[in-house]
Structure formats: C-alpha cells, structure tokens
Image (cartoon, rainbow, N blue to C red; front, side, top):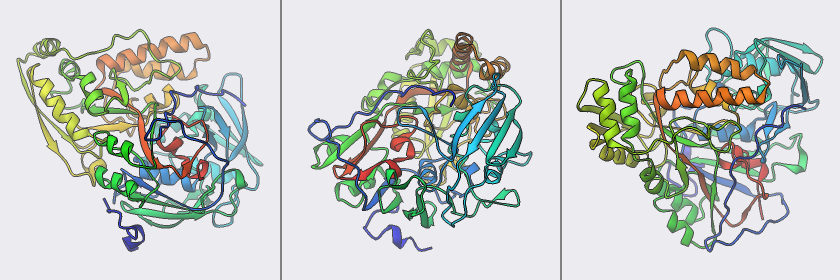
Length: 523
C-alpha cells in the first residue's frame, strides 16, 4: 500500500474485585490555565492522531505488540473480555460478567451474545479460547505468555468459558484486560494473525506499519451510540517530536501523544491548544543485561543507581511533569506501593563505594539508546554520563536510529533505554517484566526469593499478607534488580480545543487508556 494516504495533509512520515482506584488524574489546561468546558458527546468527524511510535517491523500478531502505535490501534479495532474503566475499575466488555470460586482458582466468564466482528460474524466462546491459546504453548513467543501460563484448563459451556488456574489469582480478570489479548475470530481453534478483523469500534481500512492507519466506524458496534463517536480515525506515526508538535499547531492532526517537554511552552502559547498531562504508572528505565559482565555484578548495578541524578532528570527531561523513581516499577498510587522503602538519591561517593566493592576504582561503559525508548532518552543518557563521571563511571552514549530500535537494540544490547506504561495491578507488572524467563524480562534478571514471592502473593487473599509480600518484592527489585528507573513520567499529550472528553480520564495507559477513539468526540 502506498503511504500517500497518510501524507495527504503534509505530515512528515516520521462481579469480583473492583480493582485499583484511579491513580493520579488528569490536569487539563487551556493555554491560559482555565478549566476546559465539557460538551455533550456528538457524533461525526475524523479524528487525526500523531503518535511518537510505530515501526516498520510491527506486526498484526497480538503477541508481538510492544509500542503505543500498535496498542492504540488494537484498542481502536478490537475489544477485550474486560475493559479498565476511566476510574480504574473493571468493566464487562466481550464478557458480560464473571464469578470466581472461593479460592480464586476457577473463574467463569459469561460471553456476551451478539457481539459482531467487522466481517459480520459474531463472537463465540470458541473464539475466546482460541484468542487466549494463541499466547500459550511451547512455541509461543508472546509477551502475554507469562501472565497467561497460570491457566491450566479452559472449558466451554454454551456461552460460558471456565478457566482453571494452577493457583488462585485474585487479580485474574485484570490479566484478561492485557492489550495483547483481544478477542479475535477463530477457525479450527486458531486465530489469523494476518487479519485485521476485530470486534472493536473501528474497522481498519488501510494500514502501513511504521507509517499510519486509516479506520472507519464499525456500524455494527455492539455498544451503539454510547461509544465511538467519530466517523473515522487516522493514526500517523510521527517519530520526530518537532514534526509532531508542528502537525498539531498547523491543524494537520487533532491530537498528539508524547509532547516534547522541552518545547511544551510553544504549545502553551499557541491559540486553541490544550496541554493534557495525566499522572499514572508510566516509567522510564535503563535496563542492564544481568547475564553479562559487568552488569552481572550487583555492586556495579548499585554504583550506577547512585550515580544518576534523579531530580535533575525529572526537572530537565520531564520539565517537572513527573516524579523520581526508585528502581522498581510500582507507582505511588497503586494498592501495595512500598511507603517504607528508602528513596535513592544522587550520591557519587556511594557510587564509588559500590565500584570498590566490585574491585574497581573506575569503569568504562556504553549505553545504546534512541529517543524511541522515551522522549528525551538521548538527552537523559547524556545527563547520566555527566553525573556518573563523579562516581568513577565513564559512560559513553551511543545514539541509535529510532526506526528498528525495539527490534535491533532493546533486549539485544547490554545497556539500553526503555519505557513502560505500567500495569493496573502489581502482579501484572512484575510477571510481565521481572519474572524469571518472561519474554519481556528485558534485563534477563532472575532472583529466587522474588520469584517465590511472586507466586505466593498472586494467590494470597489476605490483604495484609499480600501487602507485606509486595513490599518485599519492591525492595528486592530496587536493591538487587537490573533496571535503573530514575523517573515516573506523566502522560503528556496535547490536542486542539475542538476535541472533547468526559471529566474522568483513565490513568492505566496514555491516551485515555488508549481508548480515546471510542470515548472522545468533537464539540
């Protein structure tokens, strides 16, 4: 398919747990700082979105989705068994309800009747089983495999799907909200990973990976007029922050994600622009391959953790739109955030101490990074190299191309950059990125006590005991883990003032939980 479709406007190519309470919130400001007025939802118009991500190596295989372009497209064209609401609660979606056994080992989900795919077929219980089985099996490389492997059996009883788990999991419905697990049509027990057919609000008409996508509203969408107010959606991959911002100011797009915080003041001064920061669990990290020297030595890892100036990162890279991190991925708004853990701060003397504990007076290291990792990642690495020098760490910054970063650099080279949107519950975050053997355990880290606690906490129904376990897990990851997490970043998007939304905004992901295409409208 030609990319002309996406360049026509001149845009550069570049019934159980209610769940965690809403984390943080949205600060919605016009250029003058006055609150935005809300209007009644109206139908019509084409939403044009400029996104910082999207790669030519992206795929329609849901197990491979790993950047915001793919995730945003997935939520625009698909539905899931459950939806995470704008208040952080679980909402029935393809499943109209569910119930659990007393030990949370057996879960019965009732599948909603009459949910229509874009092709005209209706969703069946068999589709649900096939959609989940796609991520399981010995040959699966799906990033969702670690969080779904707890399922030992799925049986079908009419429109009910009964899940039997290896152990109790009080958060199991949250697992099924994971963006890798849309409900897709099946044939002979398998889904077609080359098909764009889904049961979500919009139909994919055109798609060129790394360039853009064009969608139209699905007239048979089961949610009716209460959702999906736009007639169409265009999603453009615009990697360059300046090009993305200029596209919004010039009216070529209506919304951009990942605003360049170094130039956010230009948007604040532009007429008709709304800055859109939302505080959630998004965090930026610098994973080290724990299998390789010198990163296999925790003393070296600790030296690096004390050699980074976190406050400077938040002030300079985030322009204050965030908070310092403490080398674990659990945000302060989550249920089991460790309030007792000592906060690491910049301490070059302590960095030198840990280097000496590893038998070194100084060390030469290289970090391979691109702004595709997170906005301002290269500048962050330069700041890190400057602060680390006082601790005896000579850090060389090697800038990598944005395109192909996630396939050629991330999890391929020993010291890189990363971003995570977080997960709605602690178990999902830890299981996806820190469990031994997980596909996206990006530092290849393994810790026996952590893995024991991970399994035990998942099945524990006593809230106090569960809290103790998650507190200890955060301490282990912070002090012995292989990823530096210097900052939690607010999701900062921007849009023109014709774009409207409700008062509550989801904080589990950017872009209103990546569901703005069905929750927002033009006023």
